[in-house]
Structure formats: structure tokens, C-alpha cells
Length: 306
Image 1 (cartoon, one colour):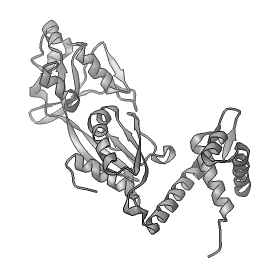
Image 2 (cartoon, helix red, strand yellow):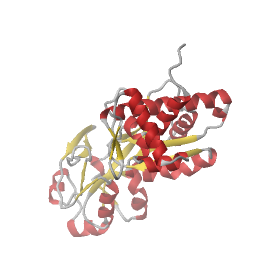
Image 3 (cartoon, helix red, strand yellow):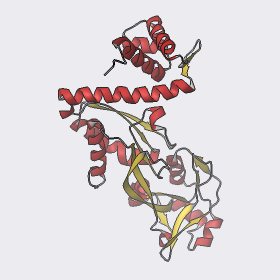
Image 4 (cartoon, one colour):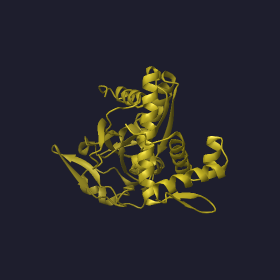
């Protein structure tokens, strides 16, 4: 087999990836124990060999060109595979180590995943977790994520989806609000109430309420003086302070319902749910650190291992 990569070229690729991730020659140099000039020269030599401009330099930072972005994604994946191969042959894979980057929606993150992660770290202290709380769909390759939890399945054939649960929905309001405005007894009475709205980040459209009548689910458009976006917990805070009626996940307000701070409304239209799934890129050789985290989260939800 002909030799395609000498040590110098592999080092240049690593420095290029580090610069792309940190958006700075200075930061990449500090992380690598080199000078900024040395890192810049190494990346320049790589660009000369390829005949392609990978980075756009400015006085403040560097950014990837379109070609650089594509090259970075491939190189990052390849370097990760090389690291895993070394760990596998040296026996390091007997004890999972390394970093896992995971994206969580705010509601599910706060109430379902974050509470169990300390127990995971206690079991696997060699694994570090980089957790991002966001309700937007992330790009696994471009943003370097290993796992994500989402409330809706993505139309990406390259992703594996494992359902974590069907989260029950419930309509709630404070006792004070219901005393002031009355308790709705039938569906049509929702139109006379302040119904707190939540806007879907991806589309900018208000999410209709999902209700069930005679065994059939249907969507109901509601109206109100408050509309939240990005974080559903903001809408829950409004509901807790008497702003109006809110449909939300029962797991968020379970304590409020048990303590009487909130009351369930129109339970005869309840019984609906929305799914939450664990997503990750399909890959032939999954790193052990990723596999044990997936198994841990599935077990926490009472599901079989991957």
C-alpha cells in the first residue's frame, strides 16, 4: 500500500481541526502547546498541498470556507475513528473514556435527563459530558454532537431514533385563575379564556393544543395574551403565576398538581401525548463511551438496551 500521509501532514490536519473548532489560531496554539504562527503556517501548508482555501482569516477570528467545512467534517470523523482504533487495540475500551456531546430540549433536559446524569458520571468517571440545552434541531456533523433528544422525529435517514417515552399532556391553571375566570366545562369555553401559547422554534408557528375526544386525537387552536418561544418552561412559569390556561407535559407540572399549586382542566379531553426520542448517527463502530450512555438513558426510561 502506498503511503499517503506522513506524520507532518497528519499533524497539520489535527491543527486545522482544532483551529476550526476554536475559531482562532491563538486558541488552537494554546491548546496544542505551540505558537499561533506555527499553527498558522501548518494550516497554510495544508492548504497549499490541497490547492484549496480552508479558512478565511480576519483580525478577530477565522471561519471555515464551504470547502473547509466539508473537509473539517470528514477529518473530524476520521481522527475520531483513529483514536477509537488505538483505544480498542490497546485495551482502553475496557473502561469507557472520553467526551460525549449531547443536545437536549429544555423541558426534557431539566426534568428527565439532567437529574440522572450525575449517577452516570459516578458510574463512568472517565467520561465527560458536554450538554447543550436547546429546542432547535442541531446538525450532528457540523456542530460535533454525538447524541440528541428531540420531541419530534427528524427526516434524516442517517440517524437512529430510539423512543424514550410518550409524554402525557395536561391542561393546567392556578386555583386563583380558575376562581377569577371560571373553570371551562366544555371545549368551546376555551375561546373565552387566556390560553398561553408556545411557538415552535423551527417554524415560528404557534403549536395547537392536542386533545382527544371519543378516542380520536385532534388539534385545537387557542388564543391568549401571552406567547412564548424557545423555552416551554417560560410558559409554565406564566401559568404558575396565574397568567392563564396552559397545555404542557405532565412531568413538568406533576409536583404542582400534587401540591395544589396548579389544577388539571378539562381532563375528559386529555389522554394525549407527544413522543421524545434519543437520536444519534448510524455508525458501524460505536465508541464505548457513547454506547454506555445510550444504554444508561434507555434503562432510566425502562427500555431495553441498544
